[in-house]
Amino acid sequence: MEDWKKRFSICCSSSSSSSASKLLRFVVPFLMAFGVVLLLGSRSSTLLFFTRWKDGDDYSYYEKSNKTGFQLPILKNETVSSIAKIEASMAQTRAAIKNSCNGSKHIQDMAYVPKGPVYLNATAFHRSYMEMEKKFKIYIYEEGDPPIFHYGPCKQIYAIEGYFIQNLEVSNFRTRDPDEAHVYFLPLSVVMISQYVYVVDSHEWDAMKNIVHDYINVISTRHPYWNRSLGADHLMLACHDWGPELSFAVPQLYENSIRAFCNANTSERFNPSKDVSIPEIHLPDGTTKGMIGGPSPSKRDILVFFAGGLHGPIRPILLQHWENKDKDVQVHQYLPKGKSYYKMMRKSKFCICPSGYEVASPRMVEALYMGCVPVLIKDGYVTPFGDVLNWKLFSVEIAVKDIPNLKKILMGISDKQYIRMQSRGKQVRRHFEVHFPPKKFDVFHMILHSIWLRRLNIQVPLKLS
Image (tube, rainbow, N blue to C red; front, side, top):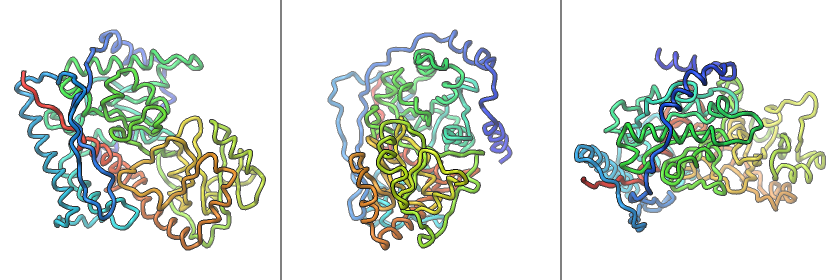
């Protein structure tokens, strides 16, 4: 516990006050020492694609053979036994999850048992989660120094990035033995790269991409794990909007690796079968103090609410049609004087969560925190934890073309249906809550579970030299 407190006292200090000397001290020597990334070849691992979990369905997976014709990586004899053990354990896990859907009994976790239609398949999710707690191990590469590596912000809009990095460093899921790991974490922070490396208004990506490029070079030359799977069992996590772009620095990183992003946009090459959508959570002071909870449906007299700047293509359309047009539709670019953003959310039945320049927005989680049903207006967005949660039961999705019909659509939801949606939103809220230290089924563990599912989809190939 003391180790955890120490790390978080560092993490939650203001990152913007750090001086440029840290960049010179930590990053420049690193870049001078390692200049060019290896050409690592192409992906050729066997994938196990899971069906979506729905109650009553069999939880099955289908093996899709590699047909690309690329040569599998050559492994040394001593590395094969550890891979074989891991893959055997993963096969047992897949079988256990499948059997749980066929009625087999398993030990009940009394802390919380997922139930109800809000889960696509509550039984499969619960068994998978329990298997994760028992088995899942992540190795964190030790290369790299703060502030670019092993560090991240724990306050403001990108807080989830630092929150995950710092919690993983001290969690029971971390292993110090790389040979027993299921996943290998690249502990870089895109937020910190953007602060220390990017030249404001330069619109230059090369220096930032070189950080990622050279780091992969370092870990792939020092360790065998990247090359044996061509990055398929490696993890990159970023909440900053630029995370996807920086991942393009190494083709195998965006083609093969598990990428966990807030900016989960399929139009920007986000691949839901291997990548993970994580929620963007705004923590003004590093905690959720004063953010969670809200009145019952009967005490919410505003139909729908939004306030926000004109970022991206969707919000101008929203404001054009609804700003100051209808007392039931409270849409503002700027809140009226004396109005509180959070109080307005708590007075509203529905809260609009549109894309800005990018698809990620903290409004979605804020709405769930405060008991307001989220209205998602986003093109190409993959919702967080969509492998597990049935978003249609606690949120409303509206296409951009239907913005003129916003009020009609929401008024078409009966009071009974709305009360049910709001109640289900409160039920799933636990999966988006931030705790210090983390608790079972909270956002930290749900992100891990999403990563765990992607790892279950990967079978690292065995081939002796």
